[in-house]
Image (cartoon, rainbow, N blue to C red; front, side, top):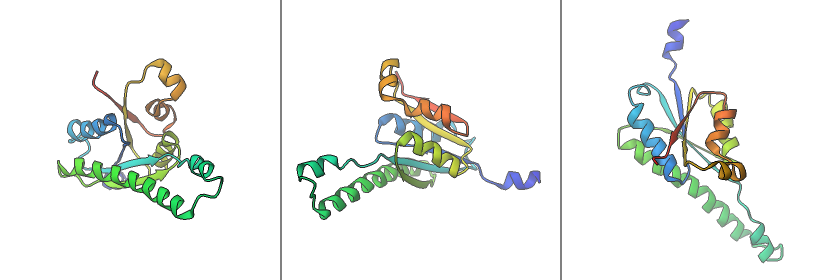
Length: 160
């Protein structure tokens, strides 16, 4: 039984968004944990927040052209895919080929749900160093993940 467990690769998920701190977290993970994660599967994850189309509907008196809506949805999806492609390029610099996963929804909830669904052994998130007041009003993705993820969470802080 112990041999079977050893043959299963560990899953390391790095959550990325458009921020520099998430790119830094990915680079940090690849550089400083390279020996620890050498035999692991790396999952690059991004969450696209829900697309708010209320202004489009309001400006068109509720009759927005379907082509416009479809175009906006496609651009929204492509933004997430482009973000993942940027992460893949960072990984490729050191010879790592990650698995790409994108979900739609509230990023902090989507990250934790994906980590559980994918059976992640380690979740890595960046932190942009929000102060206490900002965290209170805006929330903190990294703080949410630390408190809600079902796996260990590594928070890579942004350099001061």
